[in-house]
Image (cartoon, rainbow, N blue to C red; front, side, top):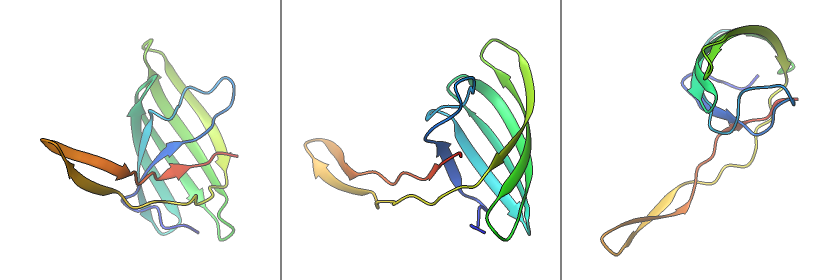
Length: 111
């Protein structure tokens, strides 16, 4: 199983009726096979999830969230994350500021 402790992720895809987007940032904590995450961004004002991971990387989660219309939503999510290629961020001096060359992009792929 991937070590999720103190890592931040964003979705790269969602179901048609899903409310999370690439603007939603998930901040994970992990103790053993127990995962928790607070998340917000995009259409989500605030959300929280708790889940159990197994040795094959499958995660079963329960979530609750408040969307931008003030509606409370709850649900179940089963996923198997995949680690995507990451590129280290590099900055160079450009004029009066810094210019980003590449972006470190930690993403969570829902299946």
